[in-house]
Length: 118
Image 1 (cartoon, one colour):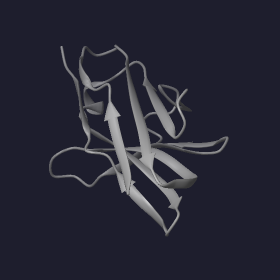
Image 2 (tube, rainbow, N blue to C red):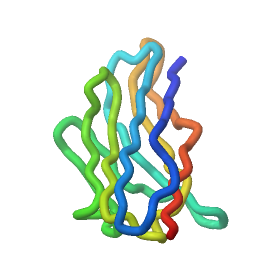
Image 3 (spheres, rainbow, N blue to C red):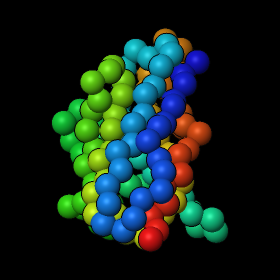
Image 4 (cartoon, one colour):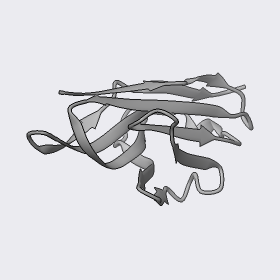
């Protein structure tokens, strides 16, 4: 019904940058929130950044380094990550809160690996 696809992960050295992209498709009538979460083995998935209209929210650990923005395509969002640190290493997941023609729900992408290492 709703598909979420992420791209842009990879390996980067400390201090480097990466840009993640996420696109949602399907029977979407209204996009409420798009966000990025991350998870490392043995830990809970945590919020990185989210956007609802013009409002944005960031985890304290990424404020000033990461920027969430809407993409050029409809129902898409980007996460620009600068000054990356080894502790940013995780699988990053895109999440969308949307209303379809039948219901409102949360949908997750498959995740993209970000590794920060020298």
